[in-house]
Amino acid sequence: MNRKQALEILELSPEATTDDVSKRYGILTRKFRDIKTDDRGYTITDITRAYNLLMGITYIDKQEQERQKKLRENPPFLARILKVDPIKLENFFNYYSLHMLVGLIAIVITFFSIRSCVNQIPADFSIIFHGRVFCEDQVPVENDVKERLPGIEAPSIQFLSSVSEDPQYQYATQMKFVAMIAAQELDVAIMDKETFEFYAGQGVFLPLDDILDKLGFPEERYVIGQENIGETENMQPIKGPEQIFGIDITDNSFINDNKIYIEEAIVAIVRNTQKMDRAMELVLSFKN
Image (cartoon, rainbow, N blue to C red; front, side, top):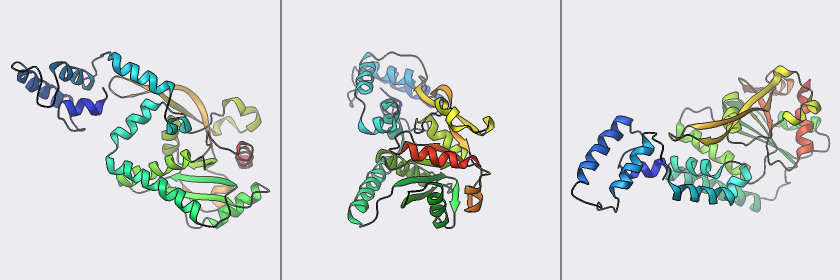
């Protein structure tokens, strides 16, 4: 049983408080004094399990544990691509509304349809700017990347801005980013710090701790993140150890000369990049 199912059993909205849960539980338990099963097929045991979960009371559901174990042993495609816990990914989609999931499917279909139908030179390197970031003209950015990476002729430079405060728009940009990660189309990401920390928690970026000698940046420029490795009973993330996932390039000429507007620019290598050597080469070009 997960939080969404528990709310459905108690017939509560996602915004329900602990007081709402307690009141609803009291109403339902009185109802079950005279019946064993309600018209939805739930028993007092189901009601109590839902109550315990929503109130953060530890309960071991052996069937759910076995289901989660099997899911982790054979994770779905998207979880393998993103290298995230499939249970967390499952909960992510449970909490977003159905129309947002439909939107993700539409984005993926459109993404691959355009690629297959348009006659264009395939990108030989891909950089995404995501989060609170804006650029008036990306052509200078493309030219700069070509200079930094000799031999790269058709870099893909994409700006996926989420400056809008509209939560639905923000969810849509997150889902588009997830679709692009799943398609293994991204090599390097440049984000504001808040967006970077969110995706570092999802395990999207390559840890840099083992290659610090190769990188050679000043220590103060490394940016630490923590992957989410599990959840508490009340659905709060459990953080893993601190690791270096990014490098601060806020004051680099790449940002300033190309008129990229971003408060804190963090560069990170996408974990499933197919062009690790070129990604490293680009990151190293930000030393100066």
